[in-house]
Length: 245
Image 1 (cartoon, helix red, strand yellow):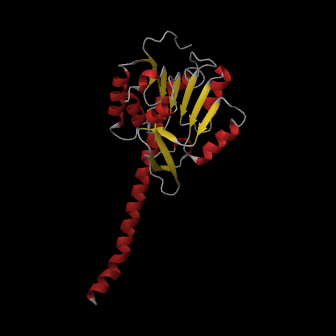
Image 2: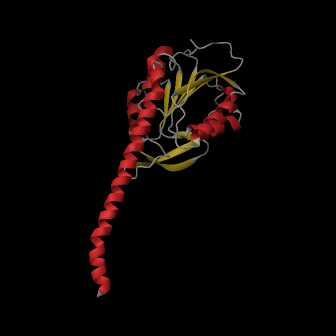
Image 3: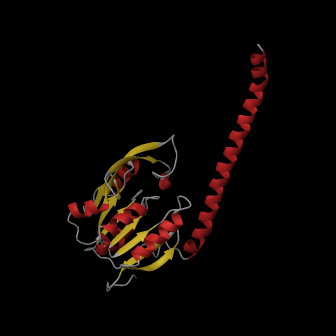
């Protein structure tokens, strides 16, 4: 009887405490979100000032004979810009069903653009991706909106399709770039890629070191031609005669 009375008194208190905790967690999450948005805006300011998306990201020594990889195709806008300018052969990799359909419709009459409904990474696997538009990632949490996707090893894909050289690869895969580049480097297939355009993502406190470690390894075969940490950077294969436009 005494226990029941005690619990009757404590229950409202416990509920109130839990509500406060949930509120504080919500505030913390929102604060973290807005802090990350602010950091991203600061980082991208120099890039936006020079209009990097309209200049650096599309100015390359390409032609209709070039081979381009678009890893993380999203809606195909970048590939469309590259094709309109150079008429290159483009391989687009996009694992999210909605975006794959959009890209397929966009390039339905273009035989030079090949679309693959899977992502590229370090190994062949199936996993869950959290859907957040152009920020969709397998490394974030969004339990209410997910999709099962397929990832294939980039080194296996290159070998199986007998690809001898890649003039430009664009990598924007929300954290998957670390494993993908590691596979390219370890397999030594990085030596057939003339230009690597990559956006590194700050997933956690270890991301900066991982980025720097990969940059150091890339420096063994490539030279950085432009670099904005966690925005965009490009690595050009050493001893290639053509310079970026």
